[in-house]
Length: 374
Ligand SMILES: [Zn+2]
Image 1 (tube, rainbow, N blue to C red):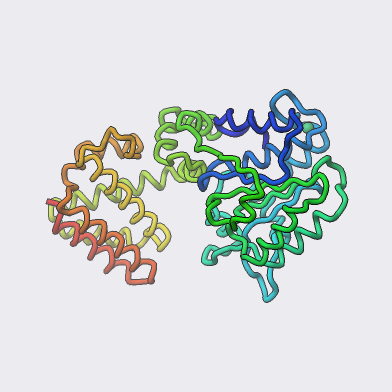
Image 2: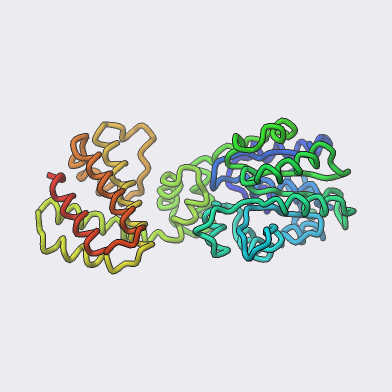
């Protein structure tokens, strides 16, 4: 990851570059930004720049021995700590999952904890940094550097450390071995123990501007600029979400069609079509059903905002197709039915999650919508 590959936020990049040029690289820093943002991307680009053997004016060269190893995230002086889950009985450490991590984070540095846990087949677990990790950090950092100027320890989501492990890390940050750099990439710095926060330099990573995100998406996915602008607007600075939306742009259109059908049949009180509709949705599979319900809740939320005259306030996030549909649809969503609808969709979600009978759940939902949509 080079600075030039990160969408927008040239201000952050240039501040980080400046710390290197002026020889004021603080040995422990917290890169704090929202989930799905560019915190990890900046940490990777910064560490690569620091260790580059042929630094350019404002970026790493990308070609030297160090850069090549950094690119594969396999430099012997680059260490990673991230939330993991128990495999067997013993407490796991990040290195148990390092192959998966290199492949996953190597594809894109924009992702969420959930997608990482999905990748290691642990979507139902919490993911945490165990006490065993602290001893591993100490062991690694007491080794001599192999090749680089700096040993770098990137800790992704330090807020997931348990207390024992955080306290051990604190000792390392208080008395760091020579030429060691801790980069803590956090989505919730308020949840890191205060004694660590007070010993780190805080680097705020602001959200990526919509226009920068759109330009990056258009280039990366080769998509039309208008489409990319829609997606970056909907994802609200969360690049992980934007990338996901680019991948399943088709799914989102399908959900819009499903939602439109439901509302149309409900308005017409066309019970036969509603039965067919619920059977079609029931055949989708649980994950897709949940996605459809979440999608519907979002569309309902955006439509009530339009009805309340908040359409230009910058809090409505819709794609072009959604906007076209909502122009005529939003008057049907009002203060009189939004609470009922939101409750019913949420209830359906809970029932799907609890493995209820999908035909019954969706027919029931469809009939409830019919009651309040006129
Ligand atoms: Zn280089």
